[in-house]
Structures are given as C-alpha cells and as structure tokens.
Length: 113
Length: 112
Image (cartoon, rainbow over all chains, first blue to last red; front, side, top):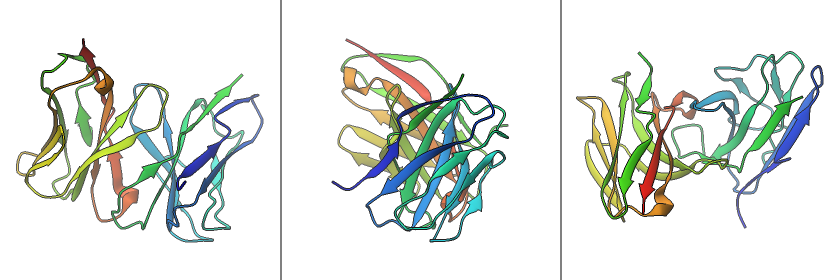
C-alpha cells in the first residue's frame, strides 16, 4: 500500500538526549515536511524538503535537524537544544512544493521524561 | 490577529443535522484552502480543498469560499457520530506549501 510511515509511534526521551524520528514514503512524492502539533494548537512547520539533498527551515526549526539523502526518507532529529520537545510530530509529503495537497503520516508522540 | 482563525468549540450538533464550521484568514493573497479532519490522537486527513469563490460539494461535505470576506466554511449534512472530530482549516498564502498555515481547529461533537 502507498503511504507515509512514521516510527516510532511513541517515544520517551530523557532530557539532554537527541532522538531521531523516522519518516518513509512510497508515494514517489518530491516534497516532504515535518510539522509539530501541541495540544489545542495548529500545526507548525519545522523543516521541509523539495528535492534530495536539499531542505529548508520552517517556522520553528531551532533545536531540530533533518537530512534528505533519499527521496523516500526524511528523518527528523530532535536535539537537546529543543527546550520543549514534548509534542505530536507529523511527517507529510506532496507531489511538489508548489501548492499540491499535503498528505500526512500517522504521527509520532514524543514525551520528555 | 491570527493568520487563520477558527472557533475552538466544542460545537455540538444533533445527529442528522447540519454542522457548520467557519474559518477566517488574514492574508488577502491566499490562494488555496483546505479542510482536514483529525480524530483524537490521529493525524489529519484531507476532506476538501477549494480554490475559487463559491461552493464545492463532495458527498455530505460542502466547502464554501468567499475571498472578498476572507472566510471559508465547511458544511456537513446529515451529521453522523463518526463525524465527531477536530476540523482543521488550512490556508496557503502563496504557491508553495511552505506557506500553508493551519488554524487551531474546531472540535465537533455529534450527539446521537
């Protein structure tokens, strides 16, 4: 089945640790995105990538890093520099960056303990 | 003023009635508009997209866009308990998805 797979679904992190969230898509989409959602809040864009080996900061990139070595994969690392990392993280993709509809993965819950 | 505003609700509607969800946006240059449904603890799923003024119907859902008044709405006819969810309005301020801005969502509850 075509889709966007995120893992792990639930992750607990100790303060000071880096963690990496995986995102894989088999939709052959060019563009991929990472969003963060806090309770009662809208989605906020962390990073996006239009093509392999290129990515751009979104609205809240501080404390996060990404890579795009393959078209299908766009992992997100939440670093220890991110002060409030507890949130629901959503990976998404679209055919292109130019206004095509965005589709979401199932999300990853990150909790700092 | 927030870029995309929605009434957070909760909005309670009897089963079988019409649910009306509203969204206003601040940027007159916005090009495209989307409604996503999000069940608790799940990811958003696209319900409707609309790009030009007027109504767009898809089954029980109708999206309405009025660019002059800067609002977009979603009507759900014959509401079902399965429609109970949070509905996110998203507005694209330009031609790139990096400009897609989400509202905080309206929580809808359908009462059997």
